[in-house]
Length: 179
Image 1 (cartoon, rainbow, N blue to C red):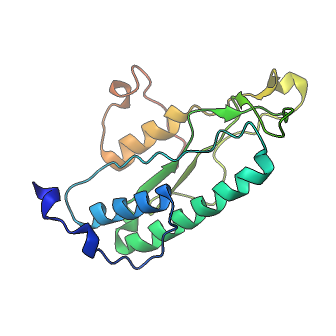
Image 2 (image 1 turned 90 degrees about the horizontal axis):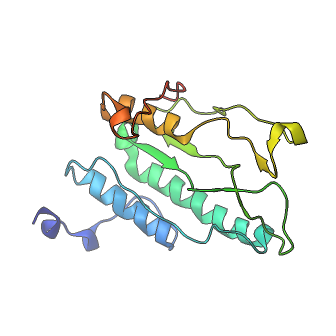
């Protein structure tokens, strides 16, 4: 009933979002956050990142709107940015080597991005495993940071969850000092 009373059509953002699913999803997230409804988590899926073919061409077409969407969202949130945390992540990584289609296949090597008003940014939180054969897991980078470390810390410090092991079945995490 509350959502029906909101007028998204009349929402005037102070940002220009890309006309993509992600851009418009973040615009809607800003609208809901500014409506003071008590929204605590918004999840937005974006597609097309499974770059098995022509990765060099496709990746630029994906990264540009991602960056512009995140910048527009940050600007739109203004004074609420201090209470906002954004996590950009994928459910899989990429292989080290290019395949025959000029792309990469599913692998373990990946990264995630965290941004927001309380994030101690400007650095990489993790350890580079190296590319030497004895530093890899086959054709994959070794995983050096479990994504649950990041999310558990955010649950504790940003959302007040006292025991993240209830969310991650026995994994409480030590934290990385992100926030």
